Length: 241
Ligand code: ADP
Ligand code: MG
Image (cartoon, rainbow, N blue to C red):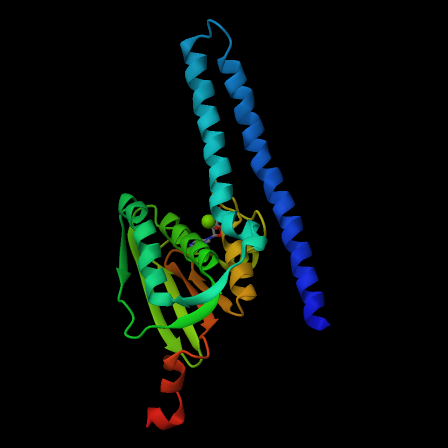
């Protein structure tokens, strides 16, 4: 069937991606291994020792960011679909991001949503998306700024807005956004937004981006509300009157 065909296509894409990502992780690990071997030399001079240590740590950090940006997506077999209440996830993710934002002088502004919105999906993957986007926003505000977060129902969808007052992107950058390994950062992976686009799409949602160079960026995610969510019936003509 058409659906089975799409699933096969998706699985093929995921395994190709996983292969290329593990290749990307292997490089820094191999380099680190080399430096550690060099450190074993007897009577190594302290200056060299310090330099090797620093390089090894830097490479490890690089492997770590690749895994952080990609982690839950790389494990399609671990997919676990459940009912997820969005407000709780927002609170969770804000808790995770808070120390990082604070360190970068970024204020997180979030008005908890009035209602509770339920969607069906993989909780870890949704968290991965929100963390990847918030991380990008914080990284786009090197001199500090504000990260505005908002959740609201829009017809039969829940809309998540992630808005920053950061460096923004021009049209050229926007076009390349989400392409594997596209990054403008020294230590970027170029995997973060790709993962977001693919996960949200797989959850039946959509992602849109608005950005202005020097002003900031807004990511808007739409995810279909679960059919049993009372927020949907609130939108029916009868109760709207
Ligand atoms: P990485 O963060 O490792 O560079 P991503 O896929 O997460 O990889 O992002 C790709 C690129 O998109 C970034 O390097 C940056 O140039 C741009 N980008 C993503 N989010 C934002 C944002 N909120 N503000 C400005 N630029 C962004
Ligand atoms: Mg990123």
